Picture 1: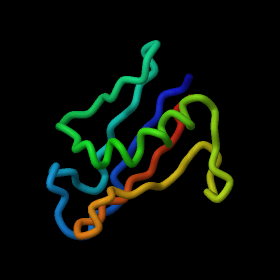
Picture 2: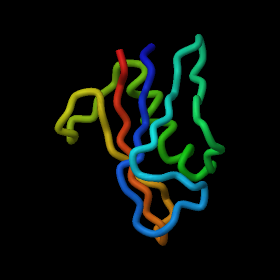
Picture 3: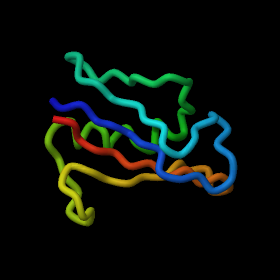
Picture 4: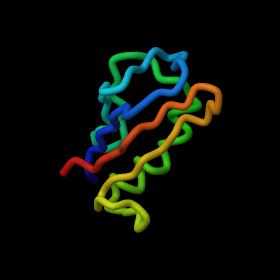
Length: 90
């Protein structure tokens, strides 16, 4: 399995967890998928990206994305829209 890099692309409003554009965190393959993040992450964002992380870590791809091994996703908080990009790290 591969690692996955998650990068905060943009925020419209205010992220209650305090994330800012440009911040990066990782899901690492340690024999299990481990979140490596400098700050606490809300369960809403984690829930929105966890299936994408698992798909990419196991070699999956998303045909509608321009770049192989990447996808964009959003926090489900529609009043404070946080967009992240996920990228498989070989």
